[in-house]
Length: 148
Image (tube, rainbow, N blue to C red; front, side, top):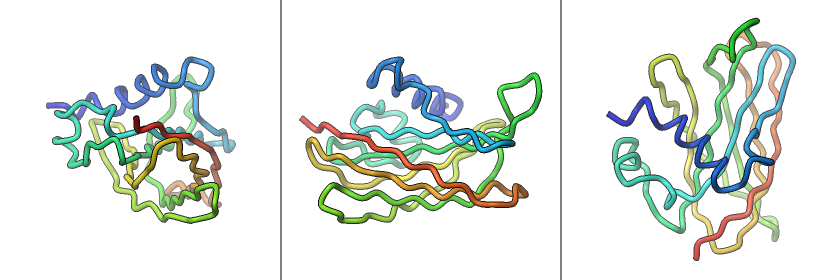
């Protein structure tokens, strides 16, 4: 029931929580655009977390990655990709994030969860290799989490 709503919800949540200035978290790599965001799973509605088997907690973060191949006259075509993600906190402790693929109609995206603490800032490194797209691309971004 909620499948067709998760991806739009995650991007709209990002807009609401971080403001329009940071709403478009994407990086362009020629023929591909990688969209990404991070949020606290406590912000997800309980029905969505049940549907996707995501632990809803103020102490859990989640990243969402989508890869679109540019297609003239469209917003892009979702493509499969090999994606590896990790996060490093300010003291330098690294966490590898296991991602899983989610498909909804024509959308393809990858989600992964990890533990967080209040006011923790994580530096994410995401390696993305689009299927059939040749070389791998690296996306780096930082996000601070608030649990209280």
